[in-house]
Length: 537
Image 1 (tube, rainbow, N blue to C red):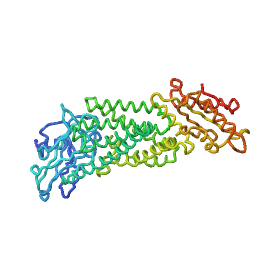
Image 2: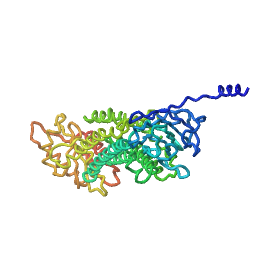
Image 3: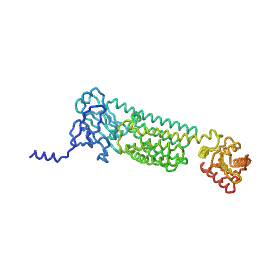
Image 4: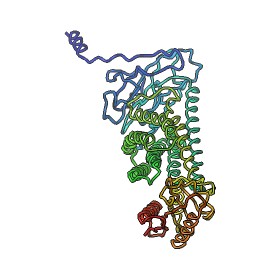
């Protein structure tokens, strides 16, 4: 009777798929299957070859939240059995467990061989750290079965094995691969820092403009974001918890300043939504620096990752449709790989895509930013050269209107700017036919000062920037220029019409307002019949 009841109980009990036991026959050897999993914590679970009644098979190519344990935060254990032939006794072996969320300690045949982060009550996540541990020879059993146990603790986001899949290999080989990844990260960060230094010097000494400083900040913060993933970096110097905070801070600042970089491509004032967005990201960075609980920082990480998707779409639309420069398609083509890799990076971080196993593929964002950074730097430097060329050699000819407006803004950006006036002069013949500005530019240059700038406002309208002149002096100067143009040698007489606006503190809040007032004065002079000068009120 007892035998019958035992048989019935065995038939009624839930059956578990038997865990695989691997025999290591080569190096590197993948450890991507055969793992058992159990929630909770008991120090005795580190003992090897325990009963397996309450353990269940699990994949180690993704977190436990994606495998039926959604919403679970806390302690959990993994274990794997593998056979190690005696021919590997002379090898120095190690295991690369990839990335784990968030804290772990590893046991080999019951012996603790390493840990990352700190368990509660002194909780310190080590999510960014790549787990590479040496397998001590004294703990290995050659020619027999060995058991690897991993105790993991997680408080938020994703827990367990985040990828790539674990692998057993020579310890020196694993370290060499990690060193190679660190070299790529540091070289990429140094490259971005050099670009930032160049653009910073351009702005500091040669007036590069607001878009230069936004670009400098993005380059430096993205370089810092890369370095937080290096094993020889902040985690080595200040601990895993500080590295995680620095990673979140750099991410938020990079996303916020990138919005300013993109918005500055409109060649006008930076839109208010971009400024508000960057400010919110700055608040998040301050929160990440000061807030005590590390797990609460994930809310800002989710917000930044959501914003990245919107920024990618907006950036591509702006580069392709709004940027009218001839180099816009170069910028679009250079940004496509970077944006694609950033989206993949976000998807991997959200565990929507598996983490790649190959070393260089783990550095997709670090590698993808290089062509984009070069293209954007060339774009900003070219724009700076176009704007500043007229300031260095003003006698060469007419400045483009964007360059002329930039020079007005630059002169009014200094504290207590000196007197300054702007005139727009439309030149037509007596019969009313417009005159090309190139036809009168050389003659006009002879009747203005060398320090004055000439720009092209339209097909028959020239702009004049007069420094160190108040309104009365500028009006007299413009009248002299108009009289000189009437006497210009040629088959027909000219009728120059001018609009004048002089800067005064308190009258105009910005260079844009001054230029609009000058345009209004020109229209007023034309409405009065032309061949006269009108001044802005």
